[in-house]
Amino acid sequence: RRENHLLGRTKLSMSESKIIPMSEVQKHNSKKDCWVVIHGKVYDMTEFAPEHPGGSHIIYTFSGKDGTRIFDTIHTPDIFDKYTDVAPCVGTLDPKDVKETVVEEKKEGEKPPLDYLLNAFEFEQVAKSCLSAPAYAYISSGSDDEVTLRENHSAFGRIWLKPRVMVNVRDINMETTILGYKSAFPVMIAPTALAKLAHPDGEKCYCQGAGNQGIIQVVPTLGSLTVEEITAVRKPGQIHFMQLYVNTDRKKTEKLIRRAEKCGCKALFVTVDAPQMGRREKDMRMKYVPQATNQEDDGQVGNRGGGTANYLSSFIDPSLAWSDIPSLKETTNMDIVIKGIQCAEDAVLAFKHGAKGIVVSNHGGRQLDFSRSAIETLPEVMEALKKVGAENKMEVFIDGGIRRGTDIFKAIALGAKGVLVGRPVIYGAAGYGTAGVTKVLQLLKDEFRTAMMLCGTTRVDEIDSSMVSIKSLHHHYVASPNPDMMNYGYEPFAKL
Image (tube, rainbow, N blue to C red; front, side):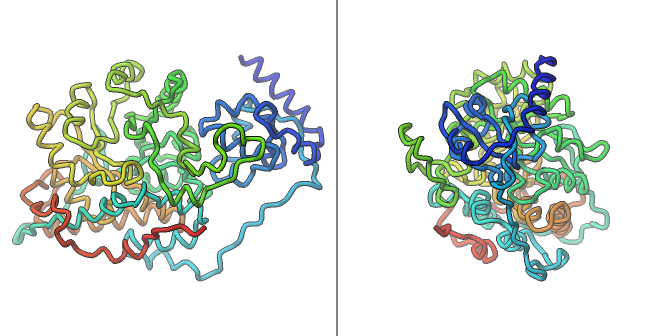
């Protein structure tokens, strides 16, 4: 295989000297003969397109065209150098046909100074001015009417705190352990896809921000950067976990697991709530790209059915079942965490199948609308695990809607070992790169510290259910604090 790679590189170097006019590229615009221009090089994608991890549709959309702009929102420019057998280069585009991509610079003063931002909500306002419309639609969208998307945070507003007084809180220790690994406070960076949509440095921003704050980053399967590229910028001793979408081709799944192990990832977060991607209408509308004429016979004409989400998720195995967990455990020595639990029954099944942890999650409100929030589901999950003796044998995490340090406190009080934060980190990176990620996490940490002090706790393990009131949690009709900043940032319809 090494000889084939060397031969491939030789052919690549020789072929690059061939000048190809755009008129010739345009002739290769079918599934059986598919050329795409990337950064002035012409690649034959015919054999690779059906195996593309993000699905073949996006490649076929740019068959016979220049796909540089969409390519750059997802991949690093040197990906063809790193993976020489992806697609052969057949030549260089005629310089007369190369169109430079003009990047519109933001006006000075459009973004406030980083120190001006005081909470996670404000980062979304900045991000909206920095992101393209399709990027913001993909990141911010939820499924259908986005009821669950909004409920994820609103549910925290139905939990009330019970402050305690006359307690010595001079020394506060927010440190905890997650799956046995130290964390400066009980937060992880969630595995969100396509970080380059937010910032050119992609997931490196998240990795460096996590390192600056002493917490764990969960690396996504669908990252803009590879697990190797992300972990290469971590600090000494920094911990990473790996998120996994199980591929229909299990050999590819195993290959990714081996790469994660080689990079030192300590746990495998298996996402199980996405056998079918939810209908994220904002993303579907904004990301719609008409199919080329030569694709009109495949039944997909005018199909807005996925937007970015479905373009990227076509490889996910919808047949994944509990019976697959033993084989996953045999494949790796990493701890298995099941991500996407939404009821007590499945939490118990995860324990019985040997999971070291679970993430109670509705996928950020992006899957089934009118799913309950993770924070509402958490108490019943903990009660069910207690009944089967699993309360202290399997760690429980939650994600979705966490915007304040008090949200973290409430989750810990109801039994969570920690929380995962996604969109606030993305918005931090969109506006300010690594510095923005670091600042978002610092704000959450400061707010969490304040909540601990005013509730009379000095260590994370002192936080318990006696410190919160959840009488209104399950009563969706009960009035809750109006989340003005969240509502101001919410955009119900994307512009056509």
